[in-house]
Amino acid sequence: MREDECRIRGNVGAEILAGFRHIAFNLLDNKKTFKAGLKRKQKKAAISTRYLAEVLAGQGSS
Image (cartoon, rainbow, N blue to C red; front, side, top):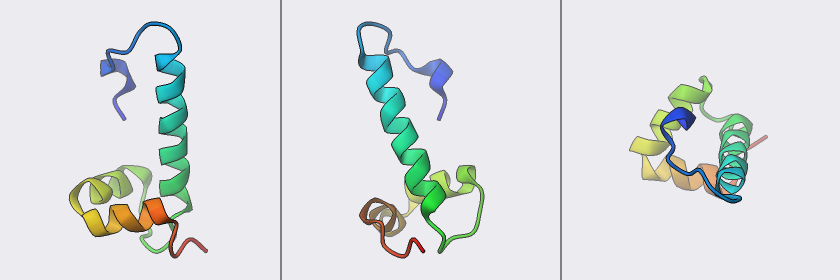
C-alpha cells in the first residue's frame, strides 16, 4: 500500500493508519470469491465499486 510514500509522521496518526491498513489486508485476505493475490484484490477493489462493497460488507467470505 506504498507505506514509504505516506506523509503521516507525528503523534499516533501513523499507528492508526497502520491499523487501518491491517484491517484492509485482513478483509481482502478473507475474501474467497475472487482467488488472487492481495495486489490483484487491491486493484480490483479500486476499480470495481461492487467488489469493494462486497469486501467491506463481508459477503461471501467462507
